[in-house]
Structures are given as C-alpha cells and as structure tokens.
Image 1 (cartoon, rainbow, N blue to C red):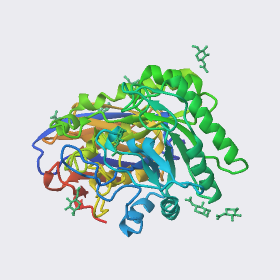
Image 2: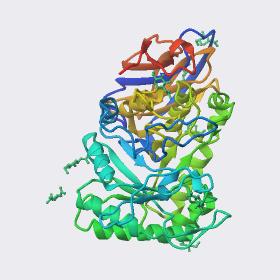
Image 3: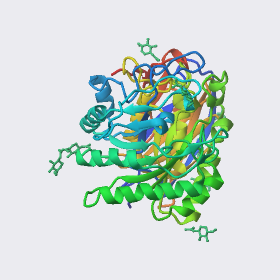
Image 4: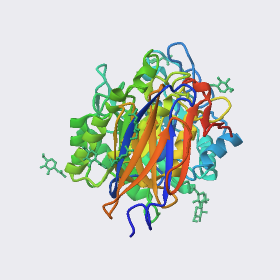
Length: 488
Ligand SMILES: *[C@@H]1O[C@H](CO)[C@@H](O)[C@H](O)[C@H]1NC(C)=O
Ligand SMILES: *[C@@H]1O[C@H](CO)[C@@H](O)[C@H](O)[C@H]1NC(C)=O
Ligand SMILES: *[C@@H]1O[C@H](CO)[C@@H](O)[C@H](O)[C@H]1NC(C)=O
Ligand SMILES: *[C@@H]1O[C@H](CO)[C@@H](O)[C@H](O)[C@H]1NC(C)=O
Ligand SMILES: *[C@@H]1O[C@H](CO)[C@@H](O)[C@H](O)[C@H]1NC(C)=O
Ligand SMILES: *[C@@H]1O[C@H](CO)[C@@H](O)[C@H](O)[C@H]1NC(C)=O
Ligand SMILES: *[C@@H]1O[C@H](CO)[C@@H](O)[C@H](O)[C@H]1NC(C)=O
Ligand SMILES: *[C@@H]1O[C@H](CO)[C@@H](O)[C@H](O)[C@H]1NC(C)=O
C-alpha cells in the first residue's frame, strides 16, 4: 500500500542530526518521536534554500569590526572557482540581492549623464552612507556570473526613490519608479533572467531608518506589477512580484495583503530574533529551546493572515541573519549557529514558508562562505544537506522527552521515505530516540536510534548524517559529518 512519502512499506529513512560532539556526553535519556505519515501539514518550494548578497562596502563597520571586506555585489571576485562551485552545488540556489543600502542605490542607465559613483561613508546620512551607484558594466558581470552558476535571482529594488524622508523616519510621496524601470528594461533587453523583483528593504511597519504606510506600499507594488506586465509582455516566465522585505508587523501586513490580493506573488519578512551581533548571550539564546520557540508566533500569525486575507501570495523569509549589525564572528559563522539555522529552516517550513533566504551567502560575520577565502562555513553544509535531503512535504512531528531535543520531518527529497532532522541542544546528554510513524495501515513502524553517537541499527534502509563540532567546540568553524571533517 502506497503512502504520502513512499511506495511500498516504510523502506527508507534518512536521519540528519546535529549535536555537539561524540565526546562530551555523559548522561543517557529516553525520548520518542511521533511522525504523522498520513498527510502533510505544509509544502515548501523544491528549492527552499536561498541566500542573500548585499551592497555593504568595505567601510561598513559594527562595534569596531569591519566584516564585509570585498564581499559586496559591487566588488566581490566573481571569477573565484570556489565561489562559483559553492553556488553550482545547489543547482539552483536562490540568491536575493539587497539589504539596507538597496534603498540608496542608483542604477546607471544607458542615457545617464551623471557619473556613477560608489557608496561613500557619511555618518549623518541614512545608514551612514551616501547614495551609491551600480554601473551597468558590473550588472553585466553579475548576470553572466549568475547565469553560469545557475542561480535564481531575486533583485531588491530601491523603494525610497522619489519619497521625502522626515526626521521621525516617516516618508511622504509615492515611489518614483523611473530609474528602476530603466534597469528592468535594460535587463530584459539583455535577456538576463530575473526570478523575481522585490520592492524595498525594511520600510514596512515601524521601518528601519525609514517607513512607508501599507496603503502607499500597496500602490507602489501595483506600480511595480504594471511595469513588469508591460516590459515582460510576451516574455515567459514572468518574474514574481515580491514585497515588502521587512519585519513582520501584524496590522501593517494585514492591510498590505488586503490591498494587494491581485498583484502580489510573495510576501517577504526578515528575521533577526537573537538581537544585536554584539550581544554576549547569543550562544545561550541559541541553545535555549524556549528562546528558539519565540519565533514560531511570527510564522503562525503570518500564516493565519495569509489564510484569511484571500491573497494567493505565499510567505518567504526574505532575509534572516539571526543577529543584526553583521552578526558575531565565531558565533554566527561557527558550528553553533547551525542549531539556530536548521531550527529556523525546520520551524518556518512547518508554518508553510516556501523559501528561506539566509543573510548572507558571503559578507558580514554570518556568511555561509568565508569572506576572504570563499571556503564554506559550517552553515553552508547544513544548507546543502537540507537542500539534498528535505523534500517538499512537511510532516507533523512531535518529540516527547527532553526539551533540548527538537525534531522536524519531511518526505525525503530524492527517494522514497522520510527524512527526520533531530537537533540535540544538550551537550551533556545522549538521547535514545524511539521513533514511531502513523501509516495509512494504522500500524506503527518502529525504529530505535541513538542521537548522540553514530551507532546504527534498526530496521529498513537508512542513511544517517550526523553533524558535530570539531573537538566538541561550539565556536569551531569546522563541521564534522559522521566523524569526518567537512572540507571542499
Ligand atoms: C530507556 O528505555 C529502556 C527501554 O524501555 C529502559 O530499559 C531504560 O531503563 C530507559 N532508560 C532511562 C534512562 O529511562
Ligand atoms: C503533534 O501535536 C500537535 C499538537 O498537540 C497535534 O495537533 C498533532 O496531531 C501531533 N502530531 C503527531 C504526529 O502526533
Ligand atoms: C552627508 O549626509 C547629509 C545628510 O544626508 C548631507 O546633508 C550631507 O551633504 C552629506 N555630506 C557629504 C559630504 O556628502
Ligand atoms: C542563461 O542564459 C541562457 C541564454 O540566454 C538562457 O537560455 C538560460 O536560461 C540562462 N540560465 C539561467 C540559469 O538563467
Ligand atoms: C535575446 O534573445 C532574443 C531572442 O532569443 C535574441 O533575438 C536577441 O538577440 C537576444 N539579445 C541579446 C542581447 O542577447
Ligand atoms: C479588505 O478589507 C476590507 C475592509 O475590512 C474588506 O471589506 C475586504 O473584503 C477585504 N478584502 C479582501 C480581499 O480581503
Ligand atoms: C576565513 O578563513 C581564514 C583561513 O582559514 C581564517 O583565518 C579567517 O579567520 C576566516 N575569516 C572569518 C571571518 O571567518
Ligand atoms: C516506543 O513508542 C511506542 C509508541 O509510542 C511504544 O508503544 C513503545 O513501547 C516505545 N518503545 C520503547 C522502547 O520505549
């Protein structure tokens, strides 16, 4: 008898688990996982994994540390083979281009007479930088790079153009789309493929630096939709219309979604739930299950609003770096951050998020790749394993036992069966997991596994991927897979 995730019986399991180390555990506890294999509770995109690239110049510094180097869209080395291969490995990786400075970015146009100058530091300007400009020659290079690496591009447009910004961060006026439209026309003329055009960055709700009302934003999003209809006339597939790319605010989102039911494809929100990068308690928060659960409420509220607003739009996390102001070196670019990241991927999926964009692919202290060497940080491997193992159908999954154990299950990606992701936040306890699945036959498949070392056993075919920190060090930038160091 067939089922949701398999053809015949339960023949195949994939386990992806993450825990500190095989050395440090001292205690053993029992726990059990119950998975509902009869029906899915949500569906993610086949290409759920997305990462961002930003515009920050090398002069961007936070708390005395300048972590961006040459990792901006304007200067990153596109000829680097390690970089290219890191993207190709996903075929395709979604890449969202944007961030704070996107709303201060001017695009060079073919008829432009003004010089196209880079961002310059100015502590009294918005985000401490003067307006900058994207040269068309760089846009050409970027598109060649994205095409060759098979990336799917979401471009974040400057949505502050034409508005007046007041000292209380409010704005007046409509979006002036002239410059954006020129860039879009050029892009179409050159046959560059855009997966989506996104309008604005963190201007919704109370905004970051500047804010726009939901009613005005809906009008501006309509303007974007009309431009796309016009310049992509006869061209398929048409890029998606995405907005607003900012922090969730229930009232603002409700009004915005109510007014954009005919035009919006994807609603995006940003996540920095751990606080500032300089925070001394980041690791404590990451390993605290009730802290991690805090974000569930946002996902739940957004899912409810989408269900009741009559919009066909789906939800994406458009940018999530966990800790704002560029993250924290040896936390957001180290092993420990995979607990936060994998938990976010699992939790957002449960609430029907279709795509999750990690800040960043490269740049800041939260890159999936090292800013100078392009070598993968631990979260790169977590992203890649998720991409290869976690299928589209999300299954209801409950863990009973230690609160430090978290579990997420999806149908497997490329085979029959189920992939179970287990996160053991407890560095001192081995958890012996008793696993049960409800099947249409009303029987329970039983399998036992031990989640703190790599012991195998049980019934059926199984593949296991156990992630640990090198030397049991949470701050290590080297991840171990089944006891072996992960390297390129
Ligand atoms: C775990 O369960 C096994 C089998 O039911 C039992 O023998 C063992 O005592 C339990 N261990 C703990 C720590 O409760
Ligand atoms: C898990 O718990 C939730 C809430 O109690 C429940 O609705 C769901 O059916 C449970 N899932 C399974 C697989 O037992
Ligand atoms: C710095 O920014 C402020 C505010 O936008 C502006 O008035 C001033 O002219 C800028 N200074 C320079 C040197 O660009
Ligand atoms: C790359 O460009 C070619 C030629 O324009 C096009 O057929 C192909 O779809 C592009 N690939 C991607 C991933 O954009
Ligand atoms: C874009 O594609 C069209 C149709 O395939 C082709 O005629 C045109 O030459 C291409 N333009 C460029 C700049 O490659
Ligand atoms: C939007 O809100 C108004 C007023 O509450 C309501 O009448 C209308 O039906 C809503 N539209 C949609 C598409 O939900
Ligand atoms: C990048 O990699 C180099 C070489 O391994 C290392 O020295 C450096 O600390 C890394 N940079 C960051 C920001 O992690
Ligand atoms: C595993 O869980 C199932 C269902 O919850 C239960 O019937 C069984 O006794 C448990 N086995 C162990 C060894 O705890």
